[in-house]
Length: 312
Image (cartoon, rainbow, N blue to C red; front, side, top):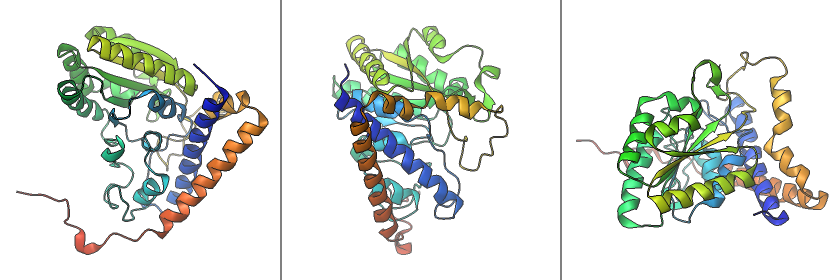
């Protein structure tokens, strides 16, 4: 199902994510953000499309490239930015920053800086959901490189053995960090799923409407059959693996070629000039206001440094 108004809304969401990520990259470079961060520039269609297909209470777990997932799940932009700035945000009070960002009150159960570590978390959530709510299931996002991690295979196997409804979205962006996926992975993610008797779908990860439809189908199949479903979304990473990545490993002209399938450009081309201009104006206003509000947030109180810290 598609409509101009829906695509306009998705375009605006993707643009807000893109603008936030681009400004965060500048913030890392000028010292407003301490340390590095992983940005989802070029991959915005996947979280926007996927979250449009989920139930209101379905938990979402992301990789360390999860800002787009948090925003798509409804996390307020100013709070997300404030948290990444290390301010006393309503999310994690500046303790999580980017790599450990979480907002369970919005259905976002966090990023994880360990490759593939979100899948065991999703497995536990799937078990909890299956025992408490027949119409609720988790979605976890991983990169294609995470399919080479042992804990991912253990979790896929267990989810199949226990007949747990869950959706695993594999964001295949062509690179395992700084190495082409083809040189490290013998069998694509969608082909591996059958080894665990898991159904797999493939989708153009640069088309938010196609992603929405694929995840909606996956959700229906998972709940109807009490089974996990894997969705491999093919996309392109238009930035570095992390904010300081010089990207010297890329072949000449690759990014220019990949920009031809940029999800923002594709969505823009399908909208009327009036609709795209309205979405762009609103997105820029939202992002400008969010950064202004985040900059005004106070620094965390040093006297509360031990709050939420527990030790035996």
